[in-house]
Image (cartoon, rainbow, N blue to C red; front, side, top):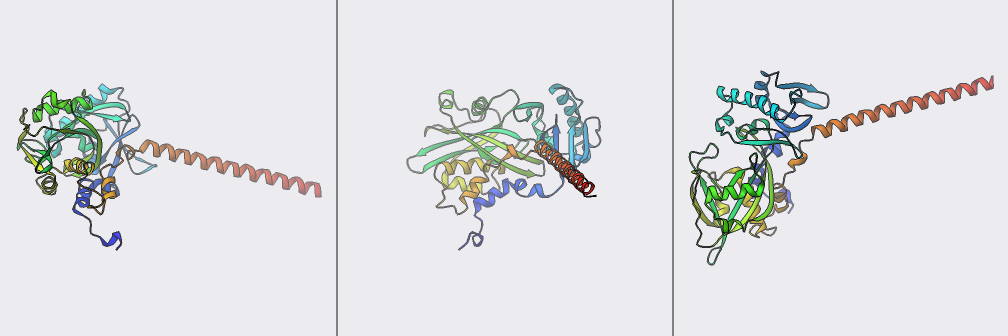
Length: 350
């Protein structure tokens, strides 16, 4: 039986869900690269571009011979990080006041860095990042125990009903965005204390477990997310409790019940990759019990770092154009040389 005859598993269908933009969004043709300082830092959909057109002093929206859709560029006259941040922030606050985008209703004065490679170009409120398709980074902690009866068990949190995003949904035990001014490990430790009251003598046992990446789209916008993952084995008698009001419950589930919870609509979609990755690394999901194992693993590590390649494609296109011109010039010169040789032969014969 060929793979085409096998129905997609629930796991692969879920991976398609949290990668819906990666798999389908690029073909829609309603997006443009977002450039800052000549570097692509995001993608902007047509409904957002329509509003940005009203701010020509901030955004240069133009066609481009190297892209089919054209580009959106933050005004290159803005000189530095501070000026770029200030000009963009003013527009975002005005859009928020007009209630044009649901994403901005989650405004929380928490800023994310907008980077090209490792250079920070500006910062924007985290609520606005989906409108610009800016890559976001976060941390997640898998809290787990090895139960003598139930085996591998995983702690989940239920988000507060008052959260701006995914209210009331089940989530990883600890998670948070990488905000301006905080490092990766530092963020993990901070969130562990705030969300689950994990004491320092346990936090020191955090184990870095790589990252997952995916490209999700919802009604709020685009989410090209990279999550730095940590594992933390906890004592059997430890029970997490919330300290910052953002979590309303915790629950410890055996691995088989945890994965079933992930399949429900009650689980935060963009946290599914972290759970699946954990269960793969701990031998619960294997090539033996998951037919689409390799495809699943690939969709946990979407190459976000190489998707925003406007500058690279621009340079390649220009280089190709220059090579074509050089080739044509060589052919013309050869043709002229051959013609000159023929003329010399005719003159000598006469």
